[in-house]
Length: 298
Length: 238
Image 1 (cartoon, helix red, strand yellow):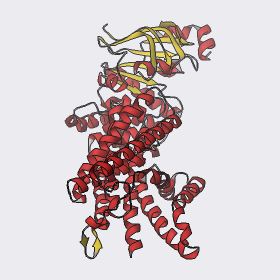
Image 2 (cartoon, chains in turn brown, yellow):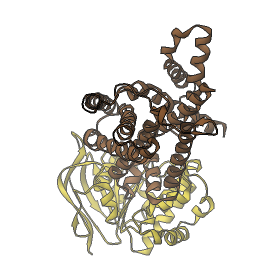
Image 3 (cartoon, chains in turn brown, orange):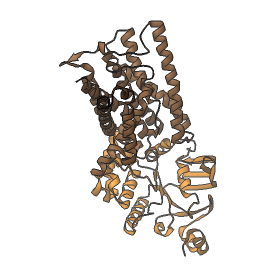
Image 4 (cartoon, chains in turn red, blue):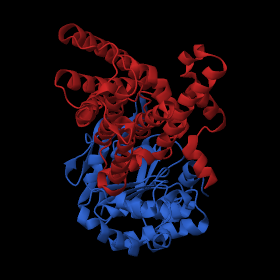
């Protein structure tokens, strides 16, 4: 049962993280390696508010959304846009996001040291399960992670489908130059997509410590899995990463359970290899990912 | 005639690549000008430059009395210029209805629905595939949608990049007929890049020949057609 709850929670959170990564990739063509650190910042927002102000962890969700949306927007405005405006290639932008990721990791480490040394908060490794509630005998994180996924997906769907700015954002994804010559402000829309992506990822980061051990490099260690979710989901449809998050979350949790029962517990540290194997197989046999597969079938 | 668009001594290109050399051009209200020239002569770059999709090294672009050479592309669109590009001119994953809505992005929201009806009555064939996804349409149908989308914003000036290229003779004829209809209404100025001058001969008031990024000559289309040396050398027509 614990594995099932782990798998369900992890899947929902991976879906949120992959959704953000895919949104950025689709709207601005950037593979954002610093997306992992946005997850970590979301976790630290929750830790800070629960430990220092005794907030309920679920009440920190809006704050995590706002902080991570702002951080992601700043990364775009300061780190990406000036270089992109000068015609930087996708590879160069990827390298820039790696540099930003290193800077953010350092900043998060300094912040966690500060929390630990000044406020005596256990910030180098933390788990907040003790703060969770139980509903129908199951931990609250199970329900809230899926509710967050459903609400985020639903809100983003309504925004993208039924508002003018959403239409322009979808148009930007489809044909950026055409959207621009029709009067859409590419820079503002790109900034908006980075903020929305950061916000969704912040929600995942906020919920992560309620079930999984977190530390200053939690997002960094998960970035490869997020890339796998994004690529496996495909960039064609926004539901792709949500579906991929579920598949990969279950594959990772149950796959490692299965392997450790066959081979032994020594394989557990290698659990991140499962999404990497899926990533390689996807690139080999289904380069357009799950959404491309559904289009072929359709 | 009042000059709606005026290009003056324009030098432009992409990054360090210089494509246009000292290009000057004037387009009056309701006037249609064809830009002709061989492949690689800079015709598309000229249109891209007006929309700031290419870099301006020197010179000026004035539209409706206002200098627009320094404005970003979305601002250029808001001045009343629309651009029918040769490629990537529809949003393939969106239905035609949404393509038209996006075409009217610069209009006040309350006007969009009414404008769609006006455009559909002008570009009638689009009504038949209004609910279909643009990516599933044929080349001719896509071009119709692209033209309808470009008209949505009630532009004063329409830039068209080879609107009939790659289309079947029937589809090309339909597009040429539509362009003629727009010209007949007399409100819209047009700058049309076209390889085949004969297709749009009846539509345009003036032709300009662009060769290797330089404006070689301008004149009435029939004057240009009568110059067999130019037609043969630069346009491959006899």
